Image 1 (spheres, rainbow, N blue to C red):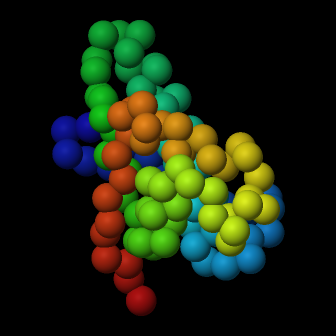
Image 2 (cartoon, rainbow, N blue to C red):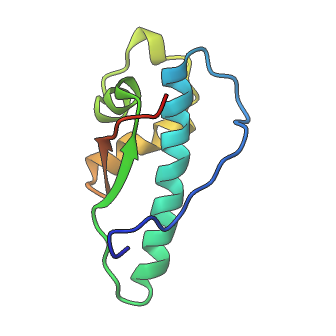
Length: 102
């Protein structure tokens, strides 16, 4: 809001990922759920945020989120993590790339 960060969180993931791309994709899905929660909260007071901008430093996870075609490498990912794809299709969120820190 007001061009600033409104939420930041760090925690261990509850599921095991087979690659860093999968781990980032799962984190992106969790972030999208939290962003939609904030959007619903602010919608109650007539404040429109759509589309919500999320940034990601893994281009593979951005591709997985933007591409609804099921790839052989991602078919084992739990269905609940594909919520981010639905949010992008409905233009509730938009995901952009940001350089990560090494």
